[in-house]
Image 1 (cartoon, rainbow, N blue to C red):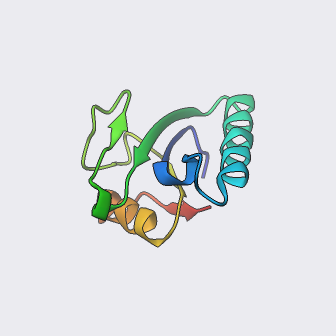
Image 2 (image 1 turned 90 degrees about the horizontal axis):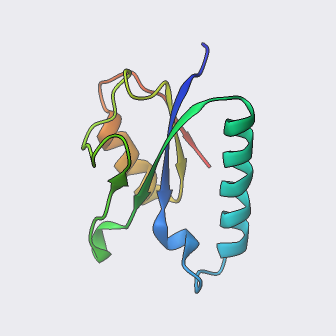
Image 3 (image 1 turned 180 degrees about the vertical axis):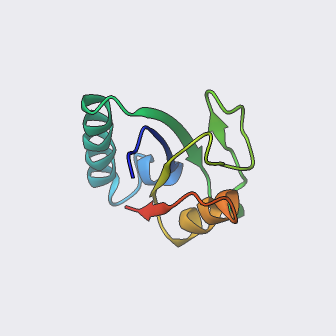
Length: 102
């Protein structure tokens, strides 16, 4: 499978200056961004907040779509924990878009 379009769902709390793993999370995201750009892969970034603190999904080109379909992404990379992975699964369920957790 050739990957040309990727949606990256990032837990916004992982980038909070008070988060214990902020530096590792930021490094991972920067590295991911570099690799995707180097390989000329179209990217769409979504920031996510856990349900208990409210939801805030922002997606530049998708206008905060609740669903991620095959025409939008060949694959979804999920940067976060269990809750972020469950949110991604909810957005892609039944649409044949694979998820990879980071």
